[in-house]
Length: 384
Ligand code: BGC
Image (cartoon, rainbow, N blue to C red; front, side, top):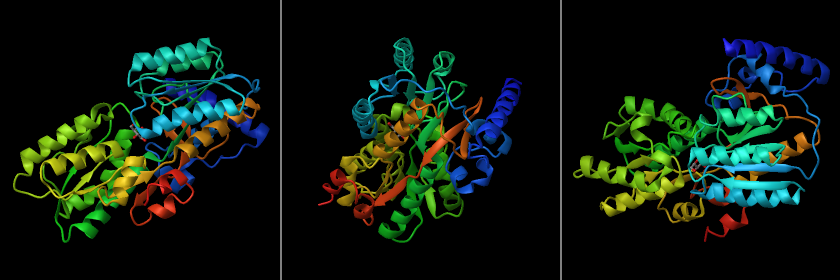
């Protein structure tokens, strides 16, 4: 009901703006199949998409304005890089940057966003601890005329979001599973292959999407017997890793090995990111298993070294530089009074269809690492 009313209003506004500005991105997600595939809930409804990709151009604001950045934690390399890059680059562009991390605690993140509102922020960038728990404070920000941009993760169940910058999350999972199957065929001889599945933190909207993408590739191979999940644990809820905590993943892997693999070899493991991949590999080594084929995500320095050494099969590059650059490009557009840039991709956040600025994740194995990191001198340095 609420959604219908809201959509009607937004649709009318969108049509008005579109006729005034001839704004791009009118085709909607349904026409952009490749992009739509990459996003969990990329909408099929062209009317909704058209309504929401035409964010009104605002009046702009002064160049030295306060910009807040609220990150979920600093527990993986990507978030630490984001903290440093946002501080340096926002300040270099003339903004006053408030960059904070919430240590995986929802109330702490709510308070940090409230204080950014009180400090007169014109834009708040949010990577949520829990995608669905910030609705009220983000709506408070919107009511105060502040732009809210989701960073790396979707902001769910709220009207208080103007757009989200992220790497395709379902696509990420597909790439992880494809790399796993490729690695099994290359390194573990003829199947069937014994595998186990891991997911990320259940509060992070990316985690179920990574898993969903991976299962779309793996389920047919489970069904035809190419791979066998020996524990039988194939639901996201069974496989998730609370808070993306590597030590919890390692404890689950220890239990899976002692409960199911005393007389069997484990050939492969689906891992949602690099920290969890290294925990899984360590667990297998401790149990005296040969190292299985393990996927990853983030191209963390340590995992790039492990991929190069043949200890972790794959990771996925989702460069923080690109995500931060895209976010700052949007902030500059808002500052100049040009509003949110148009985009063809949207995701249903449970209340509205949110414009998504989507970047492509790239799988990395030992074979292509030098090509993928050709323009990343720090990571190239690790490939020696
Ligand atoms: C990010 C990953 C990260 C994970 C844990 C996800 O939302 O996309 O890059 O590894 O959170 O911090």
